[in-house]
Image 1 (cartoon, one colour):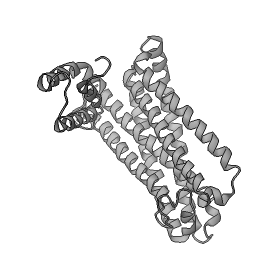
Image 2 (tube, one colour; image 1 turned 45 degrees about the vertical axis):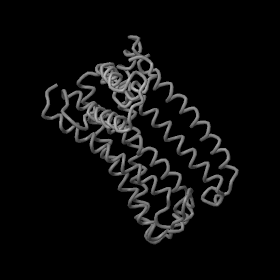
Image 3 (cartoon, helix red, strand yellow; image 1 turned 90 degrees about the horizontal axis):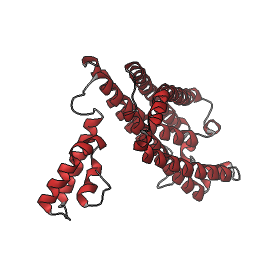
Image 4 (cartoon, helix red, strand yellow; image 1 turned 180 degrees about the vertical axis):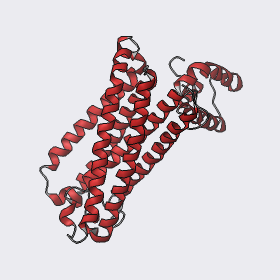
Length: 315
């Protein structure tokens, strides 16, 4: 399909690219016959297109429906785990900032439990980054071949968006760090509301940047030609990554529960507390991080399920 301009062509954005290439023109022609060349499309019809498009996207990554082959199923599962990991990284970054110098405000008695949970979350994050780096390294030769064959323009747009988002996020982060070095610990941890607002903005931009990077990685991963051995290795990395996400989530929960019981002041004075409410038990910053972790774990579970389903498929 060409450049989208009509209401019908814009509605096609809800569908995956492969589906649009095969059926998009026919569906646009049908909608034009029903509603006229310029629309408008009734709300019920628009909602129907959205539901259908999202369903096709879920089908494309193997969440629903059957999978065409073992390799495609493994690839689809790995993509879902990678998407879940992206959300987990954002949650981990929020958790890391929130827990800056947390031990200073926690009584020594019983601190071992919170320390154990914190260490588990940090270890899971480090090992997860190592796994993702290893997976990216395994796929690099295929990406190089993809570029040399001249196919890279198909992913130029998501790569460009990821680069721009990364530059903006990096600039904001650098500015925030420079400002933080001029502030007192109290100002950095809830004492200065303006700094807390900046923290929220930086987190939001970082989420967008990581989302763009993940979208670019997914776009590239779906197009490059990978051997069955490489796909099998990537699927193994995805399963291990899912396990590390469970470990990190458990560590996060243990730390939070222990601090809520013994170090409520740490939670009450944490960065972001007070936006929009203040709590020494369920601070909004940790609630946001927990929500991202849960969504990431759900996506990872779907991905692991897809990889497990491939055992009954042929290559």
